[in-house]
Length: 361
Image 1 (cartoon, rainbow, N blue to C red):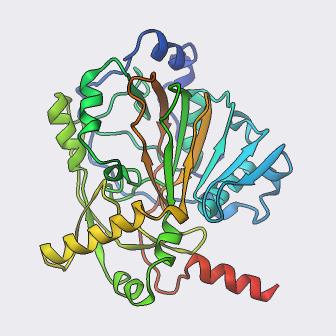
Image 2: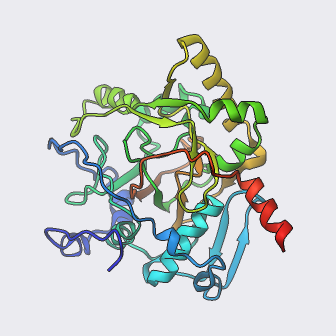
């Protein structure tokens, strides 16, 4: 049995095998429900990362694929010829390791459905149920992404914001935030709608040594206030209170052992121990460092039925809302959670570790 499998009270497949979310989105438009159900606070749990069971050579993936290629030197790998709906346990382990190392992995022309994605997500960790966002009826583990060009309020909301404000890692306001995220986009506009990812490893490595040392002794507050504000703006029910969590600014990844920067404009509020002016100044610098780090980013152009699987512990991402008037964009996301973020003073940076391993060869 996979390390993170949980048993459903009722089989999700019995409820949802007949639902075609792509068809619903294209023909009906909005189909999500926003139930007024109160959820209890999340309880701590011990996370078992299957990436630690991965083969360093990822042979189970690479030997089965038609093509595997990196999109940039530091982040992003694309794999052709494998269906995520048919992965073996060893392929899942190798995928978790690959995502930990490369940040984000892309698979085009995928047949995986929402039920299969939920089961896949459970293999990687305890699934997160969002506090406010809509989901298909009976499937709260799924976050639906549906932005319709015909909704003027949606376009108005995003046009009033800077694209750089959208950089984030998923649900970092939780005490145990997301590990991997699984996102399938099945409907794309005629142009636009790309997504950016940035490497947290390289974001750390690009900082000067004195700044690295200073940041390694600091923590920051992460808050879900943006979701609270959006719920109030749209009148949505908040099903679980949003919490503030304190996480290290430099985080050690449990699988790679590499250091990564762990702040972003989406949810990071304040640096603990600094006064407001110092905190604001330093966070603005780090946010600009991430958004302007084009040499450690990958910009991905979606095609219909593409899946991205990324590791939130080693990446940031930012969706580009530039396509209003050019069609509808629809997809869904499953979000396994992982360990509480920590910093190990004996951990190494990505560059340091790879250089030491190369020197031994």
